Length: 353
Image 1 (cartoon, one colour):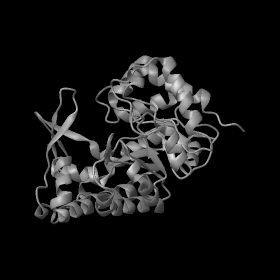
Image 2: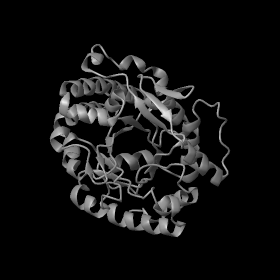
Image 3: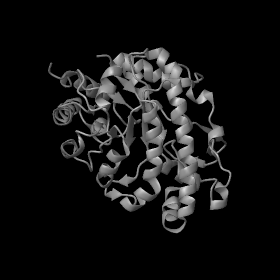
């Protein structure tokens, strides 16, 4: 099997020749990995720096895919203020990460006539061609999209604002969900036209202790809109993975009913991979669970190999598992540990004939 066949077989619940290895990196982790492997990085003036670096590392490490970032996450710096294309404003943290402090929507009237789709252009899908050219047709292109719940709270200026709206301003919640869902359906269409093979829809709806809101609110404010996006992707033969950190147990049956093919990242601090495999592993492809909070940052390479071996033994039988970190590769991940993770996946992830 080639990588594309391996990934798509797993996402559809089948057993490939070996466990696919996929990952979600940030730029800092890409540069750290490149340095560890002795790979020169493109100059910072390269428009597609992240994508080219990811492709180089896929080929160097023998990964099946690195997941492409959401094209809508590009932001512009204006002095001390960072803005996204939809008018939300951020400041830079001491760690160099943008944090939201203001959104363009304060009341229901602000959504009248609001249409986010014109802010998207063909240039947003250009990195897909760059990735495809670098990796060839035998590897899949998987693209992140930010889910309506998260896009909505960005427009409101913070998650706490939208959660308050759940109780006090339901019309505003639905109006924002409508606008953001229309945008995401158009993004799915554009991704399919550009040659994307699968989508990962990302938006945390739970913390480690439990959900951010009730299953009733999920069914009222979230599920109908996710169903539209998944249906649009299904119509274009693109499997969809749901990404949600935290304790997602209250929502797992909903995720399956909506029609998601996979679930990521199965955070080990609050979701036991063996229990997840027993409960939903015959209905969802499981993607992740290798701890990027502690293990990949401070563990030894021997510990990483042991955890990967044990996780594969639990999650891989029968198919429907892809090796991935428990969220993403970030600047604190030791490149040597990630390389050990990949090598262990290649060593222990072979399925018997």
